[in-house]
Image 1 (spheres, one colour):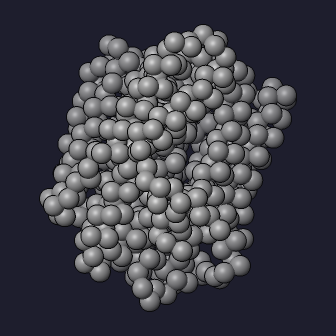
Image 2: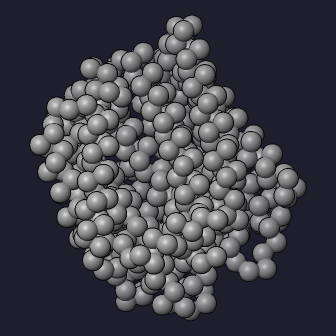
Image 3: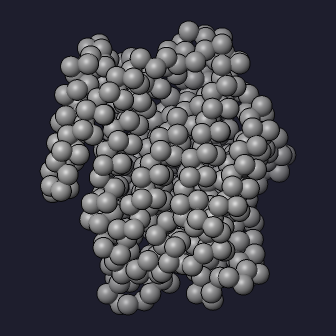
Length: 473
């Protein structure tokens, strides 16, 4: 089976799983927004965003380094997994439990938010461990197991969220549901891992030190990235009302849902990028990177143009009339979403060519620009300032990471497929504007038909690529 077919098969399986998971997540999201309203959802967003910052700190860059080391030839998989898992467990517990202690010192946060942060720590510990196990199954191209675990967790979350709403347990009941769903997903993945490898949980501190030496540049870059990725919501929660946080959080939740996909695909091609570079096979590296770039171009443009046209009916349908005001920030954030797609690809590629240390000063610049921008514009323009500065920060990071790739490989992907995808998306958007006011699902169906028809007539994808992608035996 060719590389394209192998990656396509696993991407297809994960994509189907993500579609199911996305569908369940949208139902849950709709339930929560309708139940809590803008202010209550603002509290929910504050709790989860605050903890996400510390979760990324606790990540310590282990995921990317774990995939890279595990993909190397003649690797002692049991030893590698045991060392990384025990290190992740210790770092997650230590760093995540700092969060509620800091929350106690923030006067703008109510007692309910502080209690929510304390109990939801456990959810992020389980999620942190699940992410590492996902890396193992990605390198083995065993995506079905990841999909099964994720869907199981979402189903539990759906059932427990509905129970919390029926019992009228307010915010805390929703957060408890989140904890148990994370536990279920982790438990399923851990059982799957146990069928192949029996890992040791005894900490090897010498191995942990070596892991940290390899991962700290990635960890620092992720921490700096977090400053502008989650700093907007945190600063918004300090300077504006929870109602504003809820409005912005609803649109941002769409962004967070969409950007779950890029790591799936790039995680699958990461071992091949790493091996191509390690084998000094620059042509193979260029080919894989170009195809991945083209793949994202085909997805990004219809996503942006479609959301620009359908933001209002989309938010109305998903979150309810109270969140119709979330449509304008969503139209802004969708551009940041496209940049994050490309930024994920370029960032993983930088790790594959082992130039992650070069990114550190650039991440610092992006974080500094983002932080200063948030502090200037959020107090004055609320969530509009947050949304526009998110675009600025993501654009800066993406451009700089592509520059490092070019500096090292003397290669930048061409925009041939991207330009055709943009043209096809504009054609799609033209028809969406003409049909404005029709049923949302009808508009989405029409958009899909028109876009892929335009791609076909513009000859955006070769017949050979279609045959390879279609070969999913």
